[in-house]
Length: 265
Length: 228
Ligand SMILES: Nc1ncnc2c1ncn2[C@@H]1O[C@H](COP(=O)(O)OP(=O)(O)O)[C@@H](O)[C@H]1O
Ligand SMILES: [Mg+2]
Image (cartoon, each protein chain N blue to C red):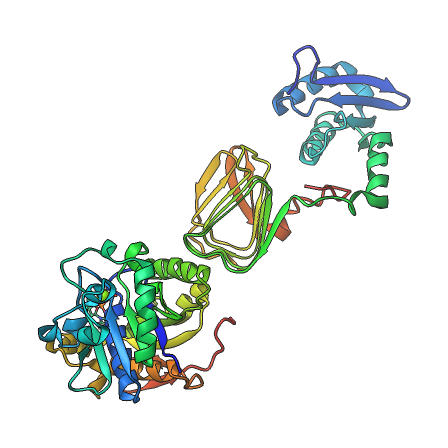
C-alpha cells in the first residue's frame, strides 16, 4: 500500500509547525509506522535541531529533488526511535530553488518508501508553501489561540480547499488558566471560525522548549502534557478517529473530556 | 428638490374644509412658517376645519405628516386632518397585474446566491446583489454592486452599492464586519459582538446606521413586493 503525505502548515510562523512535525512523526514511528519527516523550510532549517540530528546531515531535500543524491542517502535514521527518518532542509539556498513539480516527483518516491511522510512547511503562503503542499494528500493546520494566527490559518485553509485538500486542525499552545479567565481565545472560538475537523488540542508546555534544546523527541518524555497530546494526535491520524479529544485543563493532572459536538453551538 | 417658483405650501378651500398642498422636500421650518402665514389669515375659519394634507404623492414622509398634523391642531385648533384619497394609477395597476400574471415568473435574477463559509483572503465580487448562506470570516471581503445579505455571521469586510449606490443595504444575521461601506460612505466595524438579532445597515443622512432588522420596519411601508 502507498504511504500518505501530510503537510503541516499554518500561514503564520512560530505557532508550532516544526514542533508538531517532529512530535507527530516520532509518535507515528513509535506506533510502528515507517515515517519520514521532511524539512521544507529551505534556508531556515530547524527540524534537525528539534530532533537532535543536526550533526549527522550530509545531504538535504534540495539535493534529492535536484538529483544530487538518492533518497536513501539523504534520509537520516533516528537512532532512538526505530523507523523514524529525517530529510533536512538546506541551510544556504532560498525557497525558489525547488519547484512544485520537482517536489511532486520526489513525493511519488517517498510514498513507496514510507507509511507516513510529514512535510514541515515554512511560514507564509508563497513558493515555499506551494512546494510543501505540492505532493501532499492531506494537511494538518496548526493554529494558536490568538486572532492573528486564526486569521492566517483561515487563509491557508481556504488555499488548501482550493487544492481539494480538507485540512485537519491542531490548536497549539493553549493556556487553560488564560482561557478560563477569558484572556485567551478558547478552542471553541477558534473552531467557530475555522470549522474544519479537529485532531487535537495541545497545551502550552515548558517541556517543548527543553526537549527541543536537548534534541530529545518530546513524545518520549512521559511527563510532557504536550507530548501526550501529540501522541494522541498521531493515533487519531493513524485511524483511531474515535479517540476522544481531551481539553487541556488548568486543574493539575486533569483532562476535561470534550463532549460537545463541534460545529454546533 | 423644491423649486423656487413653486411655493412650499399652497392652500385652497374645498367644500367644508381646506386642501393644503405641501412640498415635503422644503425645510420643515419653512413649511411651518408658510402654514402660519396662511392660517393667521383664516382666523376663526380654521377652528375645527377639516384639513386635507396633500404631500404631492410623495412616499416616506409619514413622520412629517404626523408632525404637521400636531402642529396645525395645537396652533390653529383645526379639526380632522386627513391625507388625500389615494387615486388609482393606471400604470401602477398595469405593472401589478403583470407581476401577478407572469412578471415574477420570468424575472431573471440579479442575485449571486452562494452557500458555505467565506474564508480570510477570499474575495467575492459581483455587479449584482450577493446572498450568502453561511458565515463570512474575518479577513474575507464581499463586494456587491447592489445589496448584501448574509444568512450567518458577517465578520469580514463588506462593500455594498459599489458604484456609489447609497440606497444599498447590508443585512446579516450576526452583524460584526470589520469594515462596512455602502456607496461612498464607509465606517469601521462595531466592537459589539451583536445581540443575536439580525441587523441591517443603511445610509442615513450621510452616515451608516445599523439597526435591528425586524424592528427597523424598513420595508413595511412598501405595499407591493417589488424587484430589487
Ligand atoms: N505547546 C507548546 N508549548 C510551549 N512551547 C511551544 C509549544 N509549541 C511550540 N512551542 C515553542 O514555540 C516556538 C515556535 O515553535 P515552532 O515549532 O518552531 O514553530 P513554527 O515551526 O511554526 O515556526 C518554539 O520555541 C517552540 O519550542
Ligand atoms: Mg518551523
